[in-house]
Length: 195
View 1 (cartoon, rainbow, N blue to C red):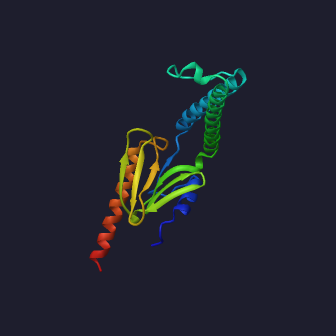
View 2: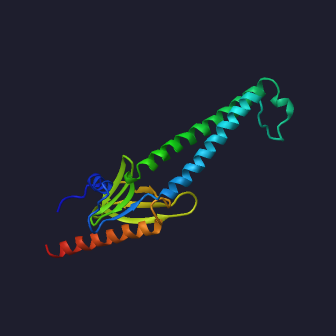
View 3: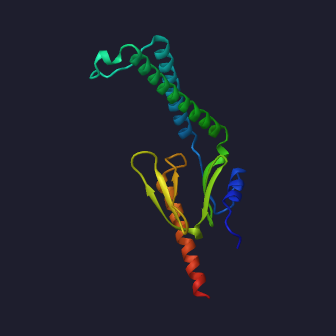
């Protein structure tokens, strides 16, 4: 039996054809639209605030700071720091908006794939995958922030997969991984019995 190759499996899935027994979870476009809308709105807002503050010379000072501490050069420094903060936030949001547009234009290269031999998480050119035979366990971490699937390989550090709901319900993805790990373990034990 050939070793599981995540890159080869990802290339096969990106063509649109998956062999029987493979389960493909393509990225959900509505998840991309929501993220794009939020980051684009934040970019426009942050860059707009930065330009407004720069042109008008307006800056925010908390009420507990005395007026004498913000006059003259101190006021200019505060204004510059606040403008740079909002400009940086705007550029950061523009970056993620462009990255999201790239994902939207190439949805066939963004997916979560489960085969009989292993799993693959493809996000464009970034491919992470592992054979079930090389996996000890999996757990789902939910709570604040996006849902994460923690995969423990037989050797090395755990892999943290930020899946949120972009590919479907995280519990379902984790269940598929757990089922594959159990099947690989059963095959491994059956192979040891016949030695």
